[in-house]
Structure formats: structure tokens, C-alpha cells
Length: 170
Image 1 (cartoon, helix red, strand yellow):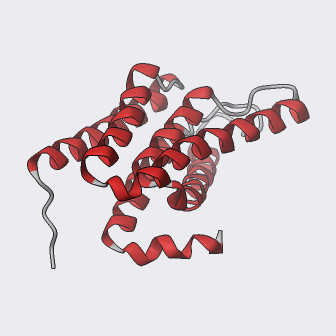
Image 2: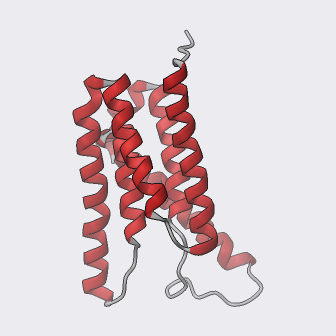
């Protein structure tokens, strides 16, 4: 049975998709995820849960906190190891926003899908660029990978709720 969302819910989902597409575009071209796009995505995700899915609100608040903290810890581990920044603060905010939209159970799948997408993109970049690209020192945008993964995993988890139950595999 197909569940059609109400008009206000549809507007929230449209905002979600629009922000993800715009964030992916800006990060790809500028290596920057602006706060003026990540914060509305975060707050609209929490507001969506308050208005339309109150039974999942606590999961999504924990998802926002966990999403930020996971990449924050990864940032500091990499910084202490290599003495350079390896991930931007905008990526942390974007993963927090995705956690606010989809809950903490989806974060493992989102990170896994984003990492695989990023790895494939890095290999394609390495092979098909005419000039030599050293992947260990060339900054690559991670926001488009997070946006693709967040949108895809969000749709999959919404369409197939049993997929969220497989989070223990990650």
C-alpha cells in the first residue's frame, strides 16, 4: 500500500531534498558546506519529527547528537595523527542534520554508503584526471557523498522499515 504524505509533510520533504542537492552542489564546487544551509536542514528535520512523527523524536535528537559527535571524534583522531584537518566542520553539521531527519539507527548505513561513494569517486578521480592527483594530500569534498547517502538511505529506511533493524551489521 502506498502512503502519500500530507501537503505540509511533502513540503518538509521537498525542503530536505532541496537542501541536500544544494549542499552537494556547493561542496563539490567550493569545498564548503555553509551554515546557512546545514542549520535549516538540521532544524527542519527536528521540526518535522515534532510535527509528524513524535514517536521517533528521541531517536532523531540522539541521531543529531551522534551524527555530529562521530565525525567530531574522527576529526580529532585524524588531526592528532596527521597534524592536519581531515574533515570539515560542515560535514559534521550535515551528518547531524541527517541524524535529525533519519534517526540514529540510520547513521551507520549513511556513513558506510558515504564512505563507499567517496572511495569510488576518489578512484574515478585518480584514474580519469589527466594531471596527476595525489589522493593523500588533495582535498576531496565529502558533502556530496553524505548527501547522496543520506537521501538514499533515508528513502530506503522509510520505504523498507525492516532495513533499519539491520543496523547491528555495521
